[in-house]
Amino acid sequence: MKLWFQAVASFSFLFQLTNAASVTSRSAGVCAAVQRKVFCYGGYNIYGNITSDTWSIDASNNFALSQPTWTNVADNNNFVTTATGYGIGVALNDGVSFLINGGLSYPANTTETNQTTILNTATNTWSTINSSLITQTRQHTAVVDANGKIWLWGGLSDYKTGNMNTSYWYAFTTLIPGTWEWGGPTSVNNGPNARVGHTMTITSSGKIVIIGGLTATKLPTLDAQGYNQWTLSSASLSDVPQYDTSNGLWNLVTATGSIPQARTLHSATLDDLSSVYGDLHIYDTISNVWTTLNISNGPSPRAAHNAVQINTTMFVMFGWDFTFVPVADIHALDTVNWRWVSEYSASGYPLLSTNTTTNTTNTTSPDLNNSSNSKPSQTSSGLSTGAIAGIAVGAVVVVIGVGAFLIFYYRRKSKKSPLQMEPSTGNYGQPPPMQQKPLPPQHQYSNQPEEIIFNDGSRSDAKDSYYAQSSTQQQHNSFIGSQGYTASSEQAEDTPPYSPGFRSPNTHDTITISKPDAHDVPHFTLQPSKPNEDD
Image (cartoon, rainbow, N blue to C red; front, side, top):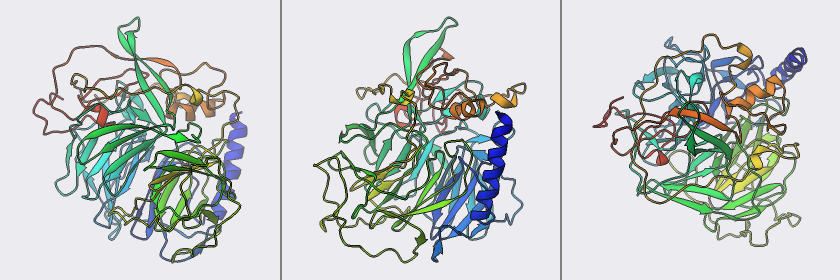
């Protein structure tokens, strides 16, 4: 099986290398649009190694998607970058900076030398942000608001990120450019359970919207060793947590309509909503209604890919396919006419005549061609309040409308999948008692076999595990945690209250409960400025 996988991987590598110039196939890297260029960093290559190279593609000129011209971004200041996979990457509001944080690093099971770094895309020089007081996290998400503040949420920290305990994060962590101070907002009420493999997008009004992924839920009983226990289950796309950055309020929105299938390791971008061509799921963030449409000629089934929005074009690139082999192709979605194109147009796309054959499954869908749906203004991060477009695990596209999300996902073939389990629901009452999470020790699993370095402490024995049963697939499965299983977490202990801001989420291995308002914050144990910080 291993030889077969290597053979397939080698073939895929040669094929993708030919079609994507000099850029190599990769998955779980990070990409962001800085002005009219797309920058991508790191990820896993076809050999399963984490990379630390940077690539860019110029979107100020037209090009054929079958022959993209990628440029390897050389480092002009000999900065030691860290190989990263499953981290986050966002473009800052200064128009030149590309920030990267967290993820899995190399060597395996170690903390990153520079956990938070910034590439100045004008000078091709790197700098680092002091992150000694935060916990390295993987599979978290980040957005930048109109004022430039960076918001991070979700994900987990475990031995693969150099942390002895495993923690799922459900409180917000923030970073303020300029002063580069880490902090955590105080939320007025409880938010959703911690998630991994989800998407997070912010509208121009400052509303953060979270979709999909896996939720971590704490069980009421301890295991035989006195450790907390947690389960991971799929998050239904009818459950759409929204956080208002202006007042700290969480709102768990229950969507209606044609609810798409649950998914994880997808991506999302924001763009205007206009006319729509097929195979799309539209989520209207005003009416909270999903609508299913149809579109063809999209990207092949994949996950752990990247989606980046530049004006009216959503680029989808990289990721691994249904054989778990990384790919290097790039695709473009015309979000004016909602169609996949073979030629990228830097000047945009003219509005085509209304498609009278569009098939929808929800009669309450918004009028996508109505001129009253005026194009929203662009946010400073380059995203509008239109459609949140993305690509997820798979082969169908999901768009969320008037503030709409588009998610392209791989339709799983198993008859029954853990991702179809009943999703957990969050308690949105009063905030729980504040808790404190210690910083992780410098810890390694040096004797961990290479074949299982990506397997979580709790793994599935279910025959219908989301990823097949091969060792290679189990490695990928571990990135999102064991699904639908019970796992031991940190040992329960009483901790003193902590000033509002952080809290660690749930885990399936060994978990550490952290800051109090973790409901609003994901993966980090931060904030040097906290008065009661004992970390």
